[in-house]
Image (cartoon, rainbow, N blue to C red):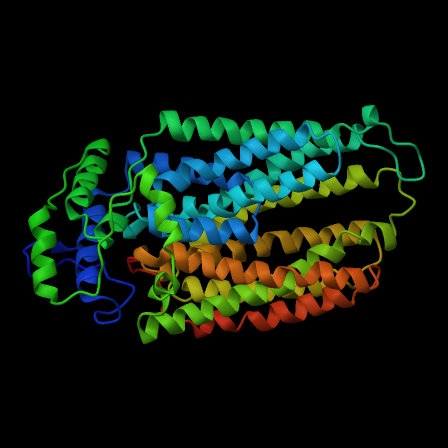
Amino acid sequence: MTDTTEANGLPSLTLDIYTMGSLDPVYQAKVKLLNDAFQEIGMGKYQWHLYMVAGLGWWSPSGLLAGAIFWGIGYDLWGRKWPFNLTILVTAVFAFTAAASPNYITPCVCVAGWSFGVGGNLPVGSIVFREFVPASHQYMLTVLSVFWTLGDLTASLAAWPLISNFSCPPAPAPCPTSSNRGWRYHLLIAGGIMAAMWIFRFFVFNFQESPKYLMGYRRDEDAVAIVHRVADINGKNSNLTLTHLKEAEMLAGESTQNGIQRVTPATAVGKFSKFSAIHVSPPFATWKLAYSTSILTTLWALFGLAFPLYYTFQTYYPLTGGAENDSNAVFITYRDLVVAAFLGVPAALMAGYLVEIAIFGRRGTLAIFTVLTGVFILLSTTICTSNAYAGWILGYSYVANIMYGVLYAITLELFPTKCRGTGSSMVFAVSRVFCTTAPIIALYANMATSVPRRVSGAITIATGLVPLLLPIEPRGKAAL
C-alpha cells in the first residue's frame, strides 16, 4: 500500500493491479478513488456481513453453461443486485420441484433449471464481495472458497445417512418407490437451505449496488452515496465526494466509457435483447488486458478438459478396483466424501495465507498446487485397495481446494469491474464447453481403465505452468 497524495488532494492508499494507460484513463482514475475510499473505510460490519451472505451462496455446487453465460453478462448489463437475489431463488425452486418428481424426465429438467441458477450464483457472490472489500483484505476472496467446502461437507453429511439407508439395493433387486426416497429427502434439504438463504438475502440483508459498477457507467452520484452508506454502516467516515470523481475525470482526459440507463424491470429484458459483440470487447480492450484474458481462458479450458476426465472415471474405481464385494460400499463412499470435504476448510485458510506471501503470491500458489493436484491424480491410479485409494483422494481434495480457491480469486481480480461479469462468464463458459468431452469419452472408453485419469493428471501437471504466464501478480494491489 502507498500513502501519497493524489492531484485532487486525497491520500493515495492503494496500488492498482494495472498500470496507468492499461485501461480507460477516466475509469482507472475514478476507480482508484473508490479503492482508496474503501481502504479508508476499512473491513467493517457491511463487508463481513456481505462475506457471510455471498459465501453461503457457495454452498451450492458448480453450474451449467447457459447459467454462467446468461448471468455473467447480466451482471454487467443490469448490475449486481438482481442477479445476486434471483440466482439462489431459481436454485431453490428447481430443487424443491425435483424432489417431487413423478418420473425420470422431471428431475433431468430440474437439474438443468437449478444449474442455470447456480451457474450465476457462485460468480456473482464473489464479484460483489470483491467490489466492496478493501485492498488490504483482498485475500479474503480466496478464503471465500471455505464456504464451497462447507457446502460439500453439508451435502455429504446429509447424503451419508439418507442415500445409505433409503436407497434401493443394486440391480437386479426390485426397487419400489417406497424404498428409494433418499435422493428426494436430500433434495428437500438442499432446497430448504437455498430458500432460507434467499429469504435472508432478499428480506434481511441490506444489499447495496456496487459503486464501481455504477461509476463505470457514469452514475457517479449514486456511487458516492453508496460509499457513504457503507461507511455509515461500518461506523466510519469517508472523505470521498462527487467533486473528487469529476476532478479525476477532467484530469484523466478523454474517456471511452459509455453511460447506461438506470435498470428497471421494464428495461432489463431490453438490455439483454440488445446485447451484441460490442459487450464482449471490454476484456480485450487493451493489449495487456487481452493477453491476461487469453491466459485465463487457456487455464479454464485446460481445467475444464482435465477434471471431468478424472471425476467421471474415478467414481467407477470402487466397483472395479476392489470394493465390488463390499456391502458397505455406499456407506464408505459417503464417509470418504465427508472427510474430504472437511479437509477443504484448512485448505481454504491455507490458500488465503499463501497468496499473501511474496515468494508465492497468487500466480505461484496456483502453479504449485495445480502441479500437486495432477500428481495426486496420477498417484490415485497406482493403488489396488479401497483404503489406499481413499488416502490419495483425501490428498487430492486438499490440494485441489487450494488450487480452485486461488483460481476463482485471481480470475475476478484480473478483470476490471465493468467487464468482470462478462469476462468471468466467458472463461467459465469455455471451461464448461471443454467439460462436455468427458461424458463423450465415457460413452466409448473402458470405464475400468486408468488411462483417462492418467491423461487428466498429465494435463493438470502441464497446466501448472500456465499461471506463470499471467502478466500481473495481484498480491498487494487493488483490483480495478
